Each structure stands twice: as structure tokens, then as C-alpha cells.
Image (tube, rainbow, N blue to C red):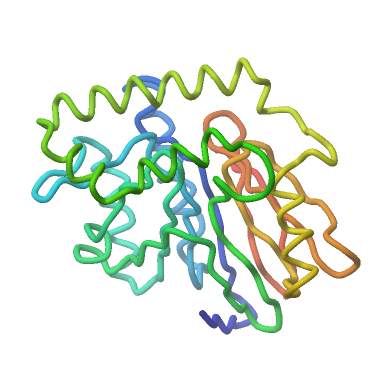
Length: 254
């Protein structure tokens, strides 16, 4: 993917909105904050990358999608009508996205990291779950969750039952992460940082852009590359901006 920016344009990146969690009221407040952010960037956005876990749970049945999120979906629909490219990535909480957003809104959905070029810079962009060393339990679970037979069997559950089960699982996952202190910086044990270093040995990228860790990070990868983690919107409201051939992390306070 090649994006050529005019001098007054920017490319935006955000991840881990976790819409739907932990409860309706809190999620709705966050949803409207995200909409205010989208309104603040739409005049100069050449493209917007939403890098996974946008929803705390999403499963597309053949004729049903999860209830809610109409203000957010309406906003991105308006932006698409203005011609602003929006690109989705699946995360570990919404990995069951299929073609709903692509068919209805013309928003491509990527399930794996992709290479993009913005002006003179080369970026690798993805959610980040299941990459790098360790976390073998999750990698095994991801194989199960992405298995087509398992997905078809889950689809046979009534949506009220299937979504209830998934929401319970999602809640237990967040609790588990808090107990494991996943929000703290792990130094050389940061597995996504380790992953970028291994990739850089084979192929050069100027920027590695990931989410998943819920921790805003900007770390060197060799002499000419950087690993950027976009953080989250549950409490930090951080996002990335590419402009004037540089990538920066920012936060939204309004």
C-alpha cells in the first residue's frame, strides 16, 4: 500500500478502543470521545488505520452483527462518504471480523500485519497479538479461535448465548492481564520489541506500528528504525500521527 501525502495531510493510527467494555455507560462515554477525536482529524486525514481491538468483542454471524456502536459506525460511514480511506485490523478481541465493514463501508479488514509506504518511509503495521517469543498459551488459543470448523460451530449458537459467552471470556481476559501486570514495561522482555528486532535482521522498516500492549512505547530498532506501540483508549487515549516524514505519538484530551 502506497500513500503519497500532500504537505498539509497526515496519516493517523489508533488501536485498542475496546468498545463495549467494561460496561455500557463507560463504553458509551469512550465512544463519543473517539468520535470527537475523529471529528478533530478528518479535515487533514489522508488515511486512518484502526489497528485492532476496536471492539471488545465482535463476531459476524451470517445475518447478525453485535448490537450497539451505531454512533461510531455512523461516524466512520460519514468519513468514508467524504472519501477518507479507513483501514481496519483485527485484534485478539475482534478477530472474527469478516466482510461486513468491507461490503457496507468499503473498509478493508486485515488479519495480519501489512507493509505500507508513506512518502519515503516503509512501515509494518498490525495489531501484534501472537507475534514474538513466548505467550504460547495464547498462540494455541488463537489457532483454535481462527479454525474455520470451530467458527462454524460457534455460529450455530444463538447470538444471545454466543455473545454472552464471549463477553464473559473477554472480561476474564482483562482481569487476567491485570493480575499479570501486563501494563508495565518489560524491558528486553517486551516480546513485540523482540519481534521487530528479528524482522529488522531480514527486512528493513523505518517504523513498526503495533497495538495490543496497552502501553504507549517508542523504542529504537537498530540504528534507523523505531518500534511504536499505540497504547489504548480505555484510560490513555493515545494515537499515532505520520506527518512531514516523521511518526509521533500523541494523546487526545478533549
